[in-house]
Length: 291
Image (cartoon, rainbow, N blue to C red; front, top):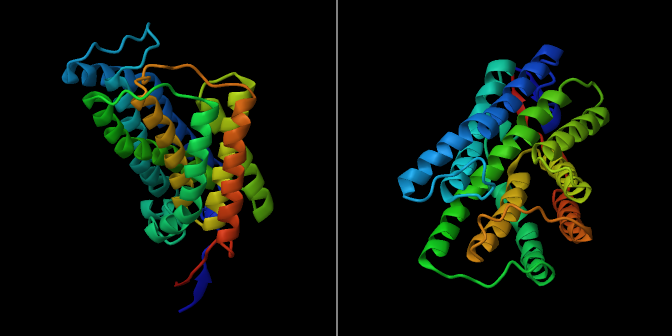
């Protein structure tokens, strides 16, 4: 019986580095995302709007309806099992290993990360509301109920994006390179650019913010050996923004924030990444396993 040490998170699929596997993983993951964004979300949103008894989403009108918003979040959350199954089918690695090198989602790692993330985001939220007011609170039954729904579904949507970009795609690209440093650099750049591109903004400030967030999420994932920290930060960030919009009754506001104000969230994201990096003194957690 021999012991082996698991590779880092980003190179965990290195045993099967063939280019066709990387291409197939990318095609599967991004294809599933395209299916959600360009095919499934509109009919699903219209169906949910009708079920909820509200005016159905109109593709010719950029306003976001409740059903369309809810459908988008739930469909993106479906990327979690899709990516896990894709890894299993293409790389013969159990879906659970997509969560972390331990083969499961480590709730203790997330809780530990929260000791850094929560205090930072409390301060950030206060500053955000000062420099970028969302409007007066509209505490109605509808907005409160929708905010509670957001607290549940937005983290799932955020996790779906992380399992695709920092999970399946990050690992598939990383598996192609022998040297760990090159593997990390290339997989971080590729997945961060793709993450920025799928947000659909051509505004330089917004695009830079998305790409920078992608880099931070990749570094968190590699450092901690799993997706837990990136999922937490992504979920907290998106949930804070969405709940603020909902409670100001601005769910249908699709305007993109731009300008130097976006330096603030980038600084916060960078500081959070640095804090998590220091918190996890041993990068790329490994464990000995019998083989």
